[in-house]
Amino acid sequence: MKTMMRFSLLGALLVAGSALADEPGKFDISMYPAAEPTQERVVVRLPEVENETDMMVEIQIGKMMMVDCNVPRFSGNLEQHSVKGWGYNYLQLGQVSDPIATMMACPDPQKKESFVQVFGQGFFMNYTSKLPFVIYVPQEYEVRYRLWRADKLAQPALVE
Image: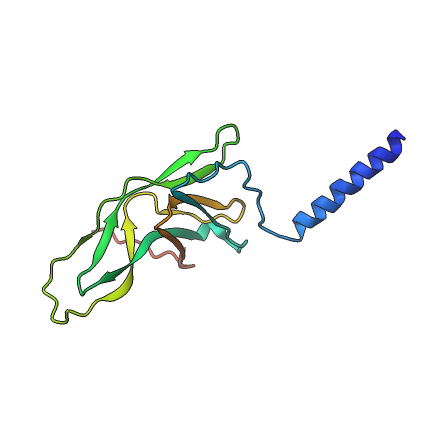
């Protein structure tokens, strides 16, 4: 009876393991806190690539707004927190200012819809395919990301 139970348990573990192996990069995020009622939890999962150390990720947080010819932006920081008892990090958008913009006189009063981004500290991080980026933002904000790659050849600096 015990032997049969062990084989059943072993079989279940193998099936579960192969199911997870079918989804590379799929990391369980159940240990991360649930989003508060006014927030969303956004997850960015990156594929495994060669030379991950040569790459960076830029997290872009903002919202679509009607803008004129001026360049608007929000000011705020992306704060890093730790999941208690696990040691995994997650990111949370801190206090965000009202939008600020250049004050040019626009020759064309026409407005267009544009993504207005939050600028500040914490939006650039090292590329990793091992763990997802878990980000908490207010519901009215959208999360995008952009990948940065280093040149293969490092240029020598000149002494002046």
